[in-house]
Image (cartoon, rainbow, N blue to C red; front, side, top):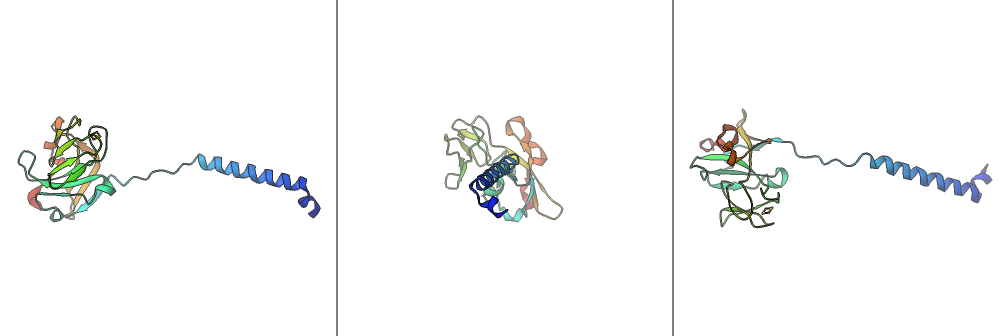
Amino acid sequence: MLSLVTTPFALGWTLFTVTIGASLLAMIRFLFPNLLVEAPGRFQVGPPSDYPPGTVSAKWKSSHGIWIVHSDAYKGRDEIYALVAECTHLGCTPLWQEMEQKFKCPCHGSGFYVSGVNFEGPAPRPLERCAIRLAADGNLEVDKNKRFRQELGQWDLPESYVDGSVA
Ligand code: FES
């Protein structure tokens, strides 16, 4: 029996079998690709007091793709809102420029006021908001599954902002 395993013939078959087995395993692995697990659409971002008037918080930008803004720049209303960090031109991620008080897209130069309204560059419309509310436990809760567009009049919907006087 031992002589069978050690013969060149047996060694060849063993290597062949191992190679085929490895290939099969690779093919099976290919059928189950790594899934990109997205951050949950609904999440809490802390109490309103974390967002004083006149601030743009990038705390949730890298993990959830939003800024939390407390401003009266839109229609003079004191609001806390969640802006989606996605340029409405081709989807790049804009940067908040504190000195100039604007969001600036590094891809093709679109600029957005702190309200999210576009004013320069090729972006055809304002940034989008997502739903935000004051949860029962006193924290702000954002829901990225619900989007609001200014040009459709949706920033007037109560789900698109929280009254800034709660901060
Ligand atoms: Fe932002 Fe083009 S993707 S300006």
